[in-house]
Length: 287
Image (cartoon, rainbow, N blue to C red; front, side):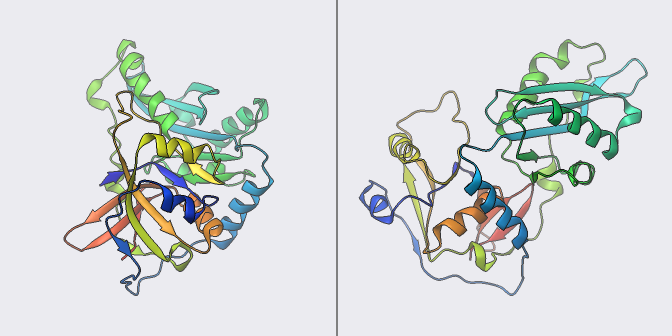
């Protein structure tokens, strides 16, 4: 599996792409499609387009986690925490929740209170845990927000890692063997489905960009973009592999791609398929 930096170049012209020093390896102009069908909500896609069009700046994105921690309380029960951070790392809220209040109604109440007291209201809320999918989905269903199950919750991952390394080990009742290693990648791994027509491009190119090419593209402020943080030891001389999609429907296609929260590419050698991993475990294949 290749984790990747997800950027949507809907406002970037093909002529500029051709001028860049990109090493093209494979051009795909035909697709081998099976008869399975993956349905997407057209209403959800339209909502994404409308939100992006009406916002003058980047939308406020919150990332939440509501789960037990590797710490036992004095009553012998697990510590539960609600962690909320925003994508820009300018907002953070952490609180413990009593075990008898672990339900969707209580979670809705606490999230509503947090939104009402926030100086900048979120327009998107993301969560990554497959184990909590039902509870969180129910709790947030009545909010006038875009709710996205997503593995692209980088600020939240960093906050949880920080607490697992520096906070929980210093708490009384810490039990390292109770740490959750996030097996959701296996829990929700499903049989790959055929890519829907709305997500198909005309051509696909495997390519690589160096850091400086990527930086110059980002300075053009493409309409849709979502860049994962670079590792601390990242070398600017390393080429970044990825895929360029050629399409006459660049803006609609970028909107769809933004909405399905693609977080990785996967080459299935045995099945001879190239897959998108999206949301928190679903998979679609290109050919």
